[in-house]
Image 1 (spheres, rainbow, N blue to C red):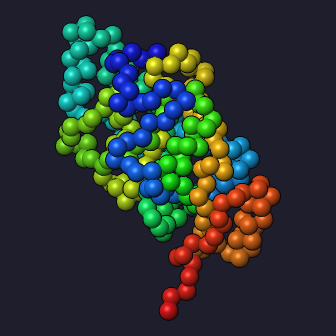
Image 2: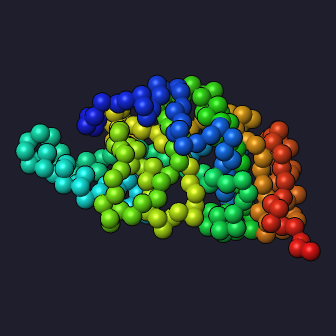
Image 3: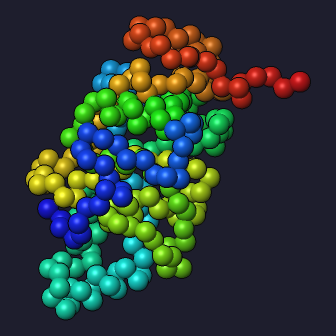
Length: 252
């Protein structure tokens, strides 16, 4: 268990509730681009997958600044804390889990290409308000917060607001600014979870009817896939609108 600060209600709500950044509005539209396998897994499990912080490809995920590193190392050398900077960062990244969304009124071709990964893909759409309600309806035993990602240049030693420390996952390097990302952060840094329990990701149960605003089919999807998505949606009893991306329309 990491004990490095007192948890403040300014960031996380009590377990079962979801805190939301004041930089977000309930009506903000969110997109999650998924391939066929992930779409079917979502429908079958009725859960959102939260990836462990040390499993991302971006080496700057969960990265601190030079100033913060120096402060932690100085405290360690002065015997004020009993962990080094590297051990603290490693442990924190193993105890924070993240679920990622794209924020925008319309879909993004870049996001289709990167996260849809093939023409046979869909985007799940919701709003910040719906996402919060869908998570809270499950009375989850987690500390959760919905946060807009801020993009910074880590190499310039920016000043980060990271109280608690898991808030470091609301910052990413500017190379990813095009993603316009919104994240749900699940913090287990103060839990007594044993190492064996901390899997590489956590499927978090969610109310699908409360969550889904629509299911959007890839603009490059073949007709047979579009028909399949419609059939699958009906089989799982989805009430959300199933439609084609507007990018599939023919230009004048």
